[in-house]
Length: 344
Ligand SMILES: CC(=O)NCCCCNc1ncnc2c1ncn2[C@@H]1O[C@H](CN(CCCNC(=O)Nc2ccc(C(C)(C)C)cc2)C(C)C)[C@@H](O)[C@H]1O
Image (cartoon, rainbow, N blue to C red; front, side, top):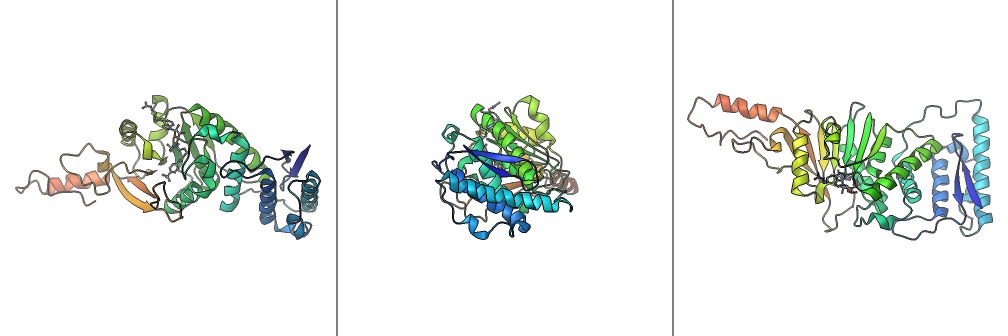
């Protein structure tokens, strides 16, 4: 026995097997509320549905009765059918656009629920686990997208992308010409594959647009991926738990990034008050400006402190200014460069 929902843009159907998934597990939503939320979001997106769908249909149903859920889906499908038929004459939303943030949060949740059959295998806990992505990371990533200006010249890379939620969110809500995620572990990479398949299915069903993206299995420090890092213009690194060796090898790659490239991370790659001296000229801090950003959303880290993240912008003029000042002050006695700290 199954339940079927028609696509509001005539892109086919999605099928739910009965009995529906129950809502066990943290953050997991049961199948019935997934169907209800999906209908509600389509309703939101297509106001013309308000007429054919009596508004009480979304309230009086019994999630445990197949008949009741089937009736609900049939009413929705009939409303969709009449809308698609009516719009046959006019242009049914030909040009598809990006989903609203609310809809994208719902889609990422629904794609995760259907792609990750056994979340226990991910053994990632804490407030930023993939299981509760919609409650914390989603808003944080929205804030970052609002903070940094993103254009269609940008290439995004998530260093250690897990099941791929951040990459999917960037691809569906920014004009990046390409979004990449690199993940080395087998389990998250396997789930990232089904996240990818499910995401494309649902985005097509809702008729929503997203940019090119790829979820890659591999170690981002391997030589074969060096080029992906050095040609990126926006990099995310949730590097809080990266060891000194990983950080060091990443900085070596950051030295080749283009000016203007942004790196956003959960731990800064150089001190916030870094000042160039003649003893730290090979530090990565000489070519980047760093700032700390407090997270607006209530999400707190596991220590209960408000979460902050670090924005680094590659800017080699910092180093140029240092050497100009050095040259200008060459004449007088101060030769140790000590007092010609950069202007930050
Ligand atoms: C040669 C050598 O030393 N090799 C050792 C390998 C270590 C480094 N290489 C890695 N390569 C590929 N994937 C690796 C390697 N290190 C570890 N991961 C994976 O990262 C995943 C964890 N990810 C999170 C997955 C989901 N993506 C996010 O949460 N992204 C994200 C990014 C930034 C932010 C902000 C901007 C707000 C800070 C928020 C979220 C983070 C914590 C790193 C795990 O699945 C790891 O397997």
